[in-house]
View 1 (cartoon, one colour):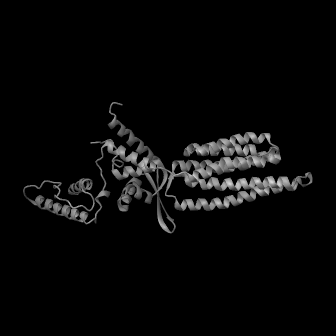
View 2: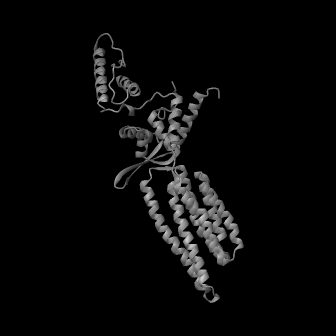
View 3: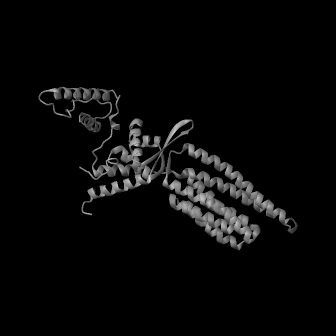
Length: 264
Length: 96
C-alpha cells in the first residue's frame, strides 16, 4: 500500500520539477496522516523517505525523469507510439557502398570482357576465348565478393538498428544473387547471350529497392536496366559488353553516387 | 480507468520500447537508451517484463569485445500491440 503511494509521489514530481532546480515548497504528502496509533508513525516514516528522496533528487543522485509513468491517457499513449515510430528515420546512404562496389566491379569486368573479345577475334581461338571470358567474370565477381564480405562485416559492427525495410532489401538481394547464376546457366544451356536476362534480373531488384527506400535516382536506374535489357537484343555479341557497361553506369554507379551524396 | 488496455503495454517506457520494435526488425539496447533517455537499469527492468510476457526476444552477444543486447519483437508482441492500438482507438473514437 505505502509502496504504491511512494511511487505516486515520485511520478508526479518527475513531471513538475526540472533537474537541478531546488523546490521552493515541499510537496504535499501523498497520504493524509491519521489521527493516532501506529499508522501515524508509519506515515511519518514515509514522509521522511519522501523528503530524503527529494533531497537526493536535488543533488541529482536520482533521476526522476526516468521513472515510469503508469497512468497514461489514450492520447498520451498515441503520442508515445507516434514519437517512437516517427523518430525511426532510416539513413540508406550506407547502401551506396554496395551499389558503388558492384557498379565498379561489374563495369570493369564488362569492359575487360569487351577488350578480350576485341583482341582475340579469330575463330581458331574461340574455345580459349570462352574460357577467358568466363574466367574474367569469375575473377571480378570473386574480388567483389571478398570486398562485400568486409563491407557487411563492418556494417554489422556499426549498425544499431535493423529496420523491416533493411530486412526486406537484404532478402531481395539474397534471392537476386543466385538468380544471376541461374540465368547464366540457362543462357549457356540454351546457347544465347546472357546480358538481356541478367539486365532484366538486375532491373527487377534495383527498381524494387529504389521504390522501397523511396529514392528516385535508383528507381530510374532500375528502369534503365529494363531499357538496356531490350536494347541488348539488337546488338551483336561483340558490343554486348559495352551495353552492359553503360547499363551498370546508369543503373548502379550514378544512383550509387547520388545516394552517397544524399543527406538523409 | 482503462481496464481493457494491456497493463504491460500501458506504461510510458514499455510502450515506447514496443513501438520502436514494431517499426524495426532488430534494435540494440543502446539505441533504446539514446532514444528514450531513460536509465539503463530502468530499461533493463522493463525489457525483462516484456520478455517474461513473451512479447520480445532478447539476444545477448559480444560486439567489439563488449556485451551487446539485441531486441526483436515476437508474433505475440505484435498481436498485443495491435490489440492495444485497437483498444486505444475505441477510447479516442467511441462512436466507431
